[in-house]
Length: 87
Image (cartoon, rainbow, N blue to C red; front, top):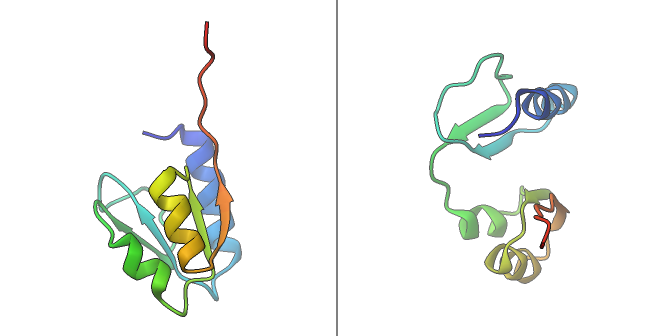
């Protein structure tokens, strides 16, 4: 799960853009302080969402498939890089 501070940061950004709807893959379909413009789901059809004309931005950890799918559908991407130190 995401740290509380990071989750609250995302929620505050979503609230600042009430004219847009946001879709977030989340392990539960409930969230404390969830804004009205946020839809949560445990599973999402990523290819169909990326193919939709109303999709403006894709926020992702950007694995190989997500990278290729976002390129294929020519969507703007914000990538949250997850890394580990190699010892």
